[in-house]
Length: 264
Length: 355
View (cartoon, rainbow over the protein chains, first blue to last red):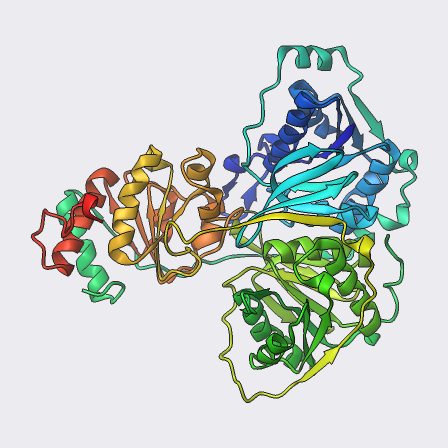
């Protein structure tokens, strides 16, 4: 069985801060990590590998700096990784991204299960996973926390709006994985040694895969970011009490009642 | 299976569509909220507003949906559409869109709405903007799709200039649902879409409904009491519950509290969780990362309780107490009891065990 896990490298969320002067996000010098929901997807793949004969292939699309995350994925237990890396992919929105990843998945071939995170923490769309399923015409189960393989079928527990669902599909199929549904394992010593020996990452260009250059990149993306506005938060009254707890609470309740926020 | 059709003359695309989701015999509230905003956009474009309702035996629901402001509803009635499934629903939407060419299609950013939109935009090869909070029409007649960008501290304007339809998803509670007018008249159109057994490529084996355990849902409550990492331990959420019980409030949490495994992810407020806009949001032991702000900064009033006077959340607080939450919360509960039940300050009206 072959499981392909799609991952992205993103800036570490908790390191992101807003520049108080420019009111924009400081991105320079921010350390990177595997997009956390993708790490949860990888953990599901590695758990399946623990119990079934499976090869786990990690796939990403981006600059060669993404090697850092692919190496980490291999050190965690993935068998090998592929980076689709090409300047002409720059600025792709979710449509060309889903297309390019789908083509690369087909070049890897022989897959039984594709896993992605539910969304990325830097773009937050959740469109690429279902987009790949749409391109490849595969069954999809989104927002899953658990995946089992039973009698050559995929069973997955999905968190829906009003409850939990168990879905079953034939293989191959695609699941997107809930952020925080498991604790991704740490890299192992053997894994690190494998990375050190090299040869665990393959770099492919669009030409290597046979991706149509007229269908990728900024100019071939349906959407553009026309502009970005800084949000000016509405002024808040900002009555902050401190000191003795009893006094603070009394002053607070007085203010809340006077402002009709809570009824007396 | 994709196609390359889209770049035909975009003036052929007319009309605003809203994908409608049913729930327990009614419409999901994100759907009624979308009808309200869809109405505004359709009027700006001088074009009709259509609701799309796939399902099985949904005519009565279509009738009712019109009362929220639709001009017509396209019903696709098929036993295969009894419950939401990715492939048949995407087939239905793709075929209807190719046939009728709407210029704008809006989805609720519910689990199923995102599941559908993501699959569909790849099949149609057109633009989809996620989690929009505002729309405009630009000078060229394009839909300006406005969504929070990283951290919710800025808003990105997304345009889909050449491709049609322009598609967007909207989270619950971003727009206000219009009042229902039972006298409103509209057209109900039945469309046939070819589906085959192969389209049922996923089988629902089990469904466990979330119970109302834990009380109100934060998205529905007037007051939300939200706990963060400062609580230090999952059992301290009982303190929040004690406060919430007295205020008729719902419980929520920050990502850090969820990541620590203290409370389920369904309670998480923020960029990767839910968006709430209660009348009063009480943040306890939450420092206020930008991602958290994204999910609660639209609250009418914000009360912050934190031991650290430099916690960023104080910057957007209407009220705040700088202090140890383990002193402040019990005191707050005591004084509320004294106000309400005529109890004696210093003693809860009801001991915790008695509830």
